[in-house]
Image 1 (cartoon, helix red, strand yellow):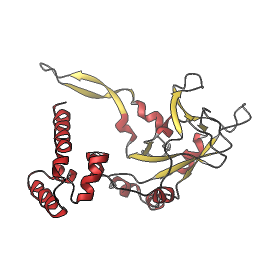
Image 2 (tube, rainbow, N blue to C red; image 1 turned 90 degrees about the vertical axis):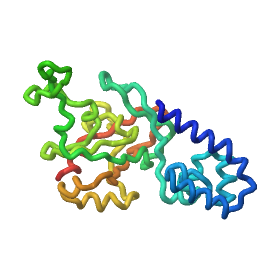
Image 3 (cartoon, rainbow, N blue to C red; image 1 turned 60 degrees about the vertical axis):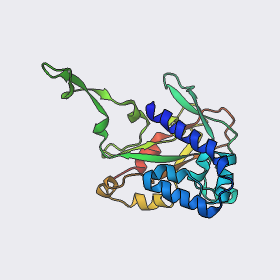
Image 4 (cartoon, rainbow, N blue to C red; image 1 turned 45 degrees about the vertical axis):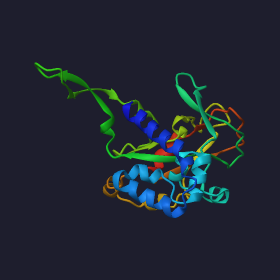
Length: 249
């Protein structure tokens, strides 16, 4: 909390004093930034380097100078919409939470992108009974007494012959299973496909298990597409087993 308050004080101080810098030209602003850089790199990164940067920060806020600016054209060519879903109570009994369409999605349209976080050993999500060290308040895990797994395991993709987990880091993690053999004739209203939009996905899929372990951040993406026209507030469901067959290492 102290760090947060200190950060707010710094941001507020910088913002309140920006207007006193209007008379500075780009050369002086750059000099000021270079001097601050010597003492605090993070603070220097927030400071304007040109008079145009100063005007933008004054109108848009201090964060303006720390983000990459993209044009609407760039977003259309390179971006994917992540605002198609909302979380809510699943319509499936005892399924917990689910994902619902926020807007109408046409057949074949993108429902959601799924960037993945990889966990090499699914056993890392095991939970064990704890013991207390004699004479201390220190607890330690008794690895002979498994009591369950962490809840995140329910939202990850895996394969029976692999220890690897791929865990979605978007609302698509809440999408529930519906079999293609369901008594409800409609079947699942969405399906997964490996992304061809994110170029790194094809490279990632060629990595060995050992090479995956050396990757700090995953750049593997799957995309979820609508099997049919999807109404607003419709519960999104997919056939999980299609995904299991894809993830074979």
